[in-house]
Length: 104
Image (cartoon, rainbow, N blue to C red; front, side, top):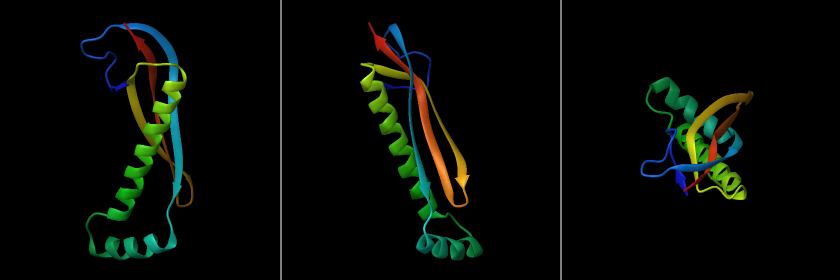
């Protein structure tokens, strides 16, 4: 299955648009991570534990989007976008979405 952020898949023609494919996840920080990252925040530098948390969340959201597209018998998802938002104090949602299509 092809995944692109563009409106078309290079070298292919879209035969049919199947609808929006989406996947999301909500992740929360944990106390241990908060303590170590608070110290890092004081001294400066990348908050690596949070970077990893969000990276894992993006990967999971993309995989869930792919599963949704497969359930529509899509060959590709075009115009993929990722967004994140704070859901609750310490919790963040990441959503991946795009247009599921069948290629010629």
